[in-house]
Length: 339
Image (cartoon, rainbow, N blue to C red):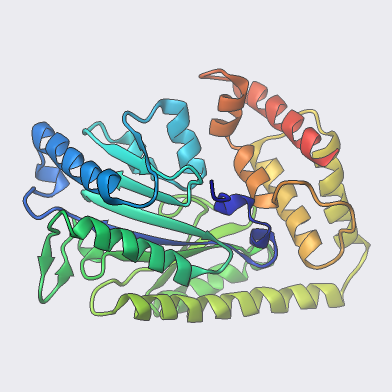
C-alpha cells in the first residue's frame, strides 16, 4: 500500500499542504443528473464501476452505500464532497486504500475523478487524473462537443472539466486581514480562494483552497500554470509578512507558539476551532524556526484531520457524541500526540 498523501512529511515542509486535480465527466448515453432516473442511475453506476474495476491497474475499493460516519471521515480526508454525501440519488464511490485517488459516481456530474498529491506536486496529480480519465474513456463514451469540450452539469465546468487546486497554509495573511484585500485581484486571473473544504466552507487553522474558476478556452496545462503563477504570488506575500513578523520578533510571538504547544499537550477539552488555531500556531512555529520542541510522529495536517468529528466518532466506536464529549475526546487525542 502506498503512503497516504496526508502522511507524507513533505506536507509540513512548505506552505502548500497538498495538490488536487478533479475532472468532471458525463456519460453520453445518459441524461445529466438532474434528469436522471433511478434505474438509469444504477445502470450508469454499474457501467462506470465495471470499466474502472475490471481494467484499472490500481486496486479500487467499491463503497456503496457510504455509511454516515464513514462519509464524514471521507469529507475530512478530502476524498468526497459534502454534496455527494447529502444526495439521496443512487451513487457509488471508488477509492484507493491510500485515499490518493477517489472517483465519485453520480455527484453533480456522472463521474468526478479526483487525485491528491502531497505538497506542491500538481503535475503528478494531473498526470494521474489524466491516466484514469483515458482509461474510463476507452470503455465509456463521454458527453463531448468539438467546440465547447466536455459537457458538464454546471456551465462553469464546461471545457476541460478541470478544477486544479492547492491546499495552503496562510496564517499571517489571514490574521493581518491582507488575504481579503488580495481576493479581487486574484479573481481577475480566474482564481478563487475558498475555505478548507472548498466552495461554501470556512477557513480553519489558517488553511485555504486556491483553485481555478475558468475551464473553457484553456488547456489543462494552461490552467495549471495559471494556478501556479497566482499561488506563487500569494506565497511570496505570506513569506514577506512572516519575515516582517520575525524582524519585530518579540516575546509575544514565542509565547503564542509555545503556549499553543502546551495547550495541546495538557488540555482536557478543546473545540475544533481552538485546536485548529493552536495547531496552526504550532505549524507556523516549526516553519519559521521558533519552535524547537520535538515534532509529533504524525504530520500537523494529519493531526488537524484526525481531530475532526468524523474521525473522533470512528475512533470512539459511537455514532453520535455530544459536543462536550467530542471536545474531551479531541483533547485526549491531542495529549497522546504531543505528550
